[in-house]
Image 1 (tube, one colour):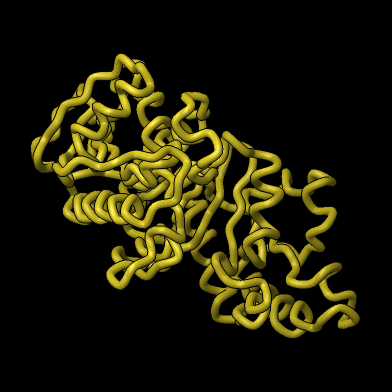
Image 2 (image 1 turned 120 degrees about the vertical axis):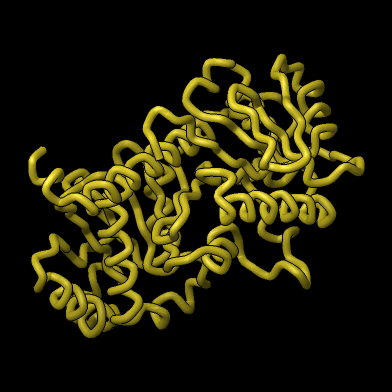
Length: 346
């Protein structure tokens, strides 16, 4: 990969009755956005034309039949299907869910085949995508199955990065899911990602406790004392800068998070509620730990405003820019790893 080359950004359209197509169009309406990357939308030329007309956009699409025919300087649309699709903004529809999966599968194949450099996924509805052929809770689990590596949901912004020990797991099962092996794997993934994806040579990571007040010495559960603390102590032996477990209730309000390069939360809402409070609209959902780069906006389908032309595209822009930065950082990290003398001479 040469730095002067444009990054090819594959985009899956997500739920067509949501805001995905709108924020994609708004992101690339300004032709200057094509100076640093080449977008490839996996959908249907006719359908994207419908959205263009609906939102009264001046964007121009370049329709192609296969991703091999990508043209730089254009907003490419790969015709994954050709039949008409009925759009009913704001409505959950299992048929629309099928098209979201068709787009995702086509984009993922192009990613695996090296025809696109990174994948950015517009929001899906996790309920209407379920079928006999597709039985994954969401993007992260599907991509973990299709790509190489151990996936981790990593929410990132300019000022905050939050990884999760458990993600789409019911709260009643979260503590029993957290084992020494899982903690070791997830922290290892975060550490590696901070180094190769974000260019941080000696990352500092904080881990949030499983129970309130880190269990209060066993008064409020013993998982922190018997599982989390001993595992963190083992991981520190190699010199890794790992701290915690911290009581989660005051960690963010006291701005303690600003002292670390990443935070690892024990379960979904423990990490995502503060992240979305602090960084909503500027945040990005990044799937760390895989051999390919995938990002997504930090919000959902937003059915309540779909079709109204008022959706904010900033998180989509951040998702695209983050994917590009990570791709370039990985390339640079790979080059330095191959040539440690060059790295040492910087």
